[in-house]
Image (cartoon, rainbow, N blue to C red; front, side):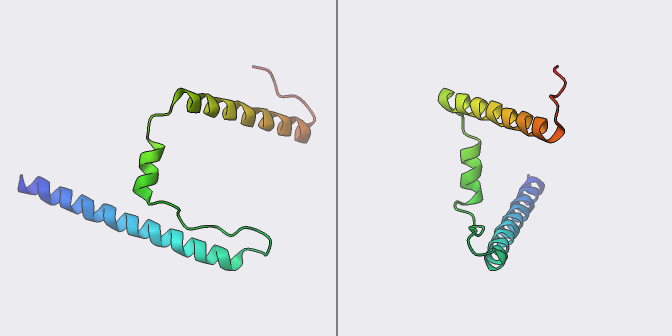
Amino acid sequence: MYDDASVIKDEIKDMWCWFMGKYVFEAVGAAIGCALTPKGQEPPKYLENPILKMSKEANRELTEEEKQQQISLLFSNLEVMKTNFELTHGEKPCPI
């Protein structure tokens, strides 16, 4: 039982260190991005929400309307990709 507690404690410590590294990476990236972004372009931003909050939001169950929007967006992106292919290659892709 004590061994399991020690392993869990080590895993929590490791996860905490990983989160701190992720936050530092995002902060440094935003700072460097702000310094190097040309005028007129929007510089990169630091995380708007904590990582765990974003993870919970990403893993929540989608409503039926949100699922339909995701499907519609996917098909729209596929149409754009198809059109770009046709424009760059001058031919239609092989129908499957």
